[in-house]
Amino acid sequence: MTFDLEDWFHILDIPDSTRIDRWKSFASRAEIGLRIFLELLDHRKVTCTFFILGWMAERHPGLVRLAAESGHEIACHGYAHQLIYNQRRDLFREDLRKSKQVLENISGMPIAGYRGPGFSITPDNLWAFDDIAESGFTYDATIFSGNHGHGGIPGIPSKPFKLKTLSGLELEEYPIASVYFGKAKTAFSGGGYFRLFPRRFIAMCIERQNRQDIPVVSYFHPRDFDPNVPRMKMSFKRLFKSYVNVGKTVGKLDFVLSRYRFMSISAWRREVFQQPQEVTIIDFASTGRGNATSP
Image (tube, rainbow, N blue to C red; front, side, top):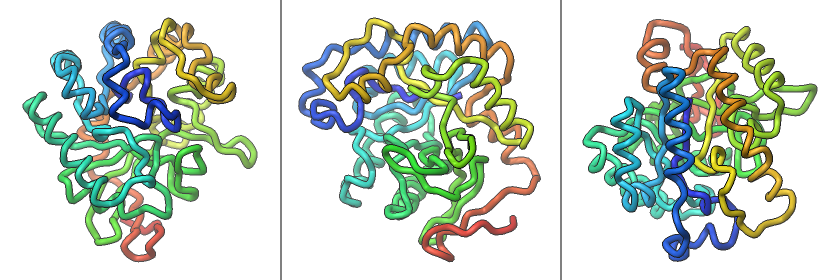
């Protein structure tokens, strides 16, 4: 179970959302959706990994502490919520360093995990994994294993795996859950996908993944739980994707949590991934693009 702690105006590719100097002019509503989500997690005894935007943490440190004191894992969502492939590499490294330091200072604990905005690592910016590893993160959760609106790497496993970066460093990777239907691959476990699809369809996808021994990595945002969230100006298609069925998220997620077991990434790492087992290794260092090898 994962949650990207950002605000309602942090929607990618919208003019106002890309200008960090404009953000302070918007009234925050993140706490509304966050508290609804935390109450649901507490009711179902579920732990979660919170990927928190550094900009948000600086302005709302109490939300970071609220998540941590509720027993959840604190992880990093970068600082300025910019697509990785749109950033100069030196600015990306600075974004990583700054956000990690902010979160560690507030939480008082080391930050192990990172997720980039919009799953924006592609075959053309694999260098990002080197910077993530060099910044002291031990795992990443940025990859979508297929084509995605803001990124994705086709051919990458949907199941958690270990990767070697272009310079030979190691990271654990936790891709967002996705399934094939015919030749089309789709996410289903978070954000607009979760809000759009019927709960029985989501349950079918979870069961399909579990039959293949693939854990389902979900992701949500505060705006997914806030029916009264303000609407940004955008195309009808983006408007639909960003706000469809917002009022139904709580009931749908409660249904899913009542049927399937979820936990934070750190808890799953302790329980499963760090135990002796066969783990797929993707070696970007050998091929420059990725090559699955035996453990």
